[in-house]
Amino acid sequence: MQAIADAIFDHWHDLIVPSLVAGTTLLIGWILKRLLFRGLHRWAARTATDLDDIFVGALQRPFMLWVLILGIHLALQASALPPRLTGYTGRGLLILWVLSLTIVGATLAATLVRRYGPALKGAAPVTTLSQHLVRAVVWSLGLLIVLNTLGVSITPILTALGVGGLAVALALQETLANLIAGFYVSVAGHVRVGDYIRLDSGVEGFVADISWRATTIRALADNLIIVPNAKLAQATVTNFTLPSPRMAIAIPVSVSFDSDPDRVERVLLDEVVRAVGQVDGLEEEPAPVVRFNPGFGASSLDFTVMCHVAGFTDQFPVQHALRKRFLARLRAEGIRIPFPTRTIRLDRPPSV
Image (cartoon, rainbow, N blue to C red; front, side, top):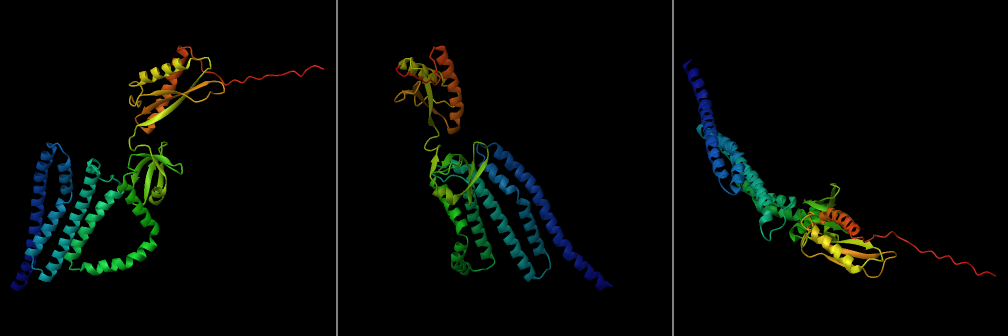
């Protein structure tokens, strides 16, 4: 009986001690997390930048997973399990820890690129493709560390990838073409997220995103147009945002033949100058001009008012407002806007 009791005691002892070690580690880690991150959040709130907030948030999410890995490791060290089994388990915990660090690093790198990439001078535009590339680099480093931990040689894997790369390239020609074209479009900087572009096919709108396969364009009607990157790279693109979002607009105005051209020019120019600061999107510089069109219309004198707006979409409300102001001003000045007229002459045949 004594031998049975000793065996039971030893069995429970082997279970209780590792469980206590793991539970104590988790409890200490939970308390440490509450105290540590409470202080870190207070410290981050007092700083001017949000960079520390990003790091604190990235570390807070996997913290308890790391504590759990530590608790299991310490419990294994306190157990009576065979060294071979504890070695395998410890290696698995190490791999899990490396993978968790890789996930945190990939997420953190993509977040930093998205938040601070646009502020870097000379940097490529921040798109979904650029964020995916950053994640891929971090994941590649993490997987190499995992393979090294497992004792796997990397050289044969790279050789196999090189041999199979040709077959993969042939099978995924369209996908690789879109990927390379998307990378080229992002790095070249001729088309950026937020730019208003028009393709030679007639597709136009704001660039919403550039992914690994396609570029998303948001039309003025708020519809999304998906253009494969390879077609975008081959298309003739008009970018209305580069080199400056400011653009010129031309507003035609016609008056009757009995109007004084110099007076019409002064009236139209004065009305545009007055509208600056009152019409949203109308720019003061470059200064507006009024041009008397070459030739003469069928029933009118034709003028063109040239002015500049802040952006592509500003041209529509600005033209709307200026046309109403021109009409009211011309009526007040007594300058007529003629209707199309034709003079028909009927000749009687000579009497015999």
